[in-house]
Length: 444
Image (tube, rainbow, N blue to C red; front, side, top):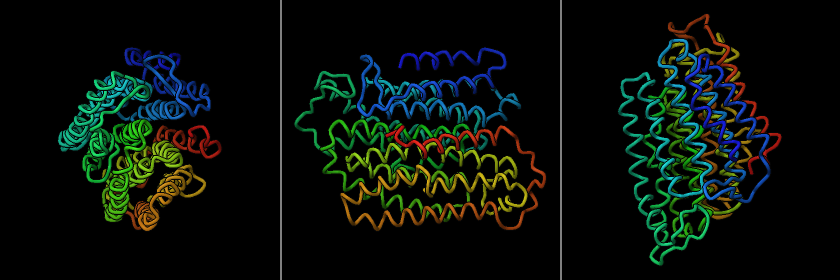
């Protein structure tokens, strides 16, 4: 693990060198491949020191973080060519990458909380400094307000538990006070549910996505939401019986919220907002699976985090490419891509099919595991789960048909100047998905 951390620390000094932009992309990709080659099928948690631990979930999320960080830089080549503080941008991306990898790896619960909150600062800077809409300050304020305020009850309960049990480790020697009931436990999980985000606490997510640059949207969808899922899985595995009294409430809200957000997607005109609401629906299914506290639910949630990380990041990148061509995110004006850019239409088709869990994608496997775990606990949930899967297919097909079919408008660039690096980044999103289809045991 130390051999994996040292290259990431070294990466923070890369912006100081000339030609560091392309070198940092290669460097991060080599780091992720190095971690991937050193992965072992460790289902049990292995502590390598009093500060760090690893298992399959930690290593898989670390690879996802480093890989997506390299693609964020590659997808943001426009910043480099226009010389819009490219060195500062690269440093913020590399710093965020380091914070997230440390957050997935530390075993001290207080250090985890500090890193969990520290990841918001580089994200907010990405939105404020490189966002292209006037409401970006308001979006960053929403992001900070929702996530920080929701995690304060979690901080209070963590401090009390640490004091009561005299333990600072995430996974060992925790004893729980007698007054600790399921509703106080819900306060501990609230910070993770807002980060996920759970329906009713999700209003910050579409706003942040709409105002963020392409790199900000990619890191939000692919990695930052997974911090909430990671925290839920870790905390739930500590004392799974605490979920018994609140699981029915949270699962009900998650599944009803999944149906509502899926219906909202059918009425969305903004492409980025549609993809953001789609993420809320998927994370609702993930949360319901985690709250079952079953092995299938946990493994399905883990697969969903990785699968959704690659597909949502690619969809936001495609939305940005579409915006660069016609300067609008409206589905009413984005028409006839199939006529002018058939190759881009192919990428829309591939990643929307992955997003709707079409076979043989890893998303399908994760949804089958999650649905099985939820239905085994509550048979009545089959109705809501059926609606979610049906409507998800509906809005994915709706988005594809709106963008790629129909008559073109006056603002469409008939001879689009598509950049090679965009398609390279999309291809690098697809490679890991194909690898996971062939070898899904890498992450469960």
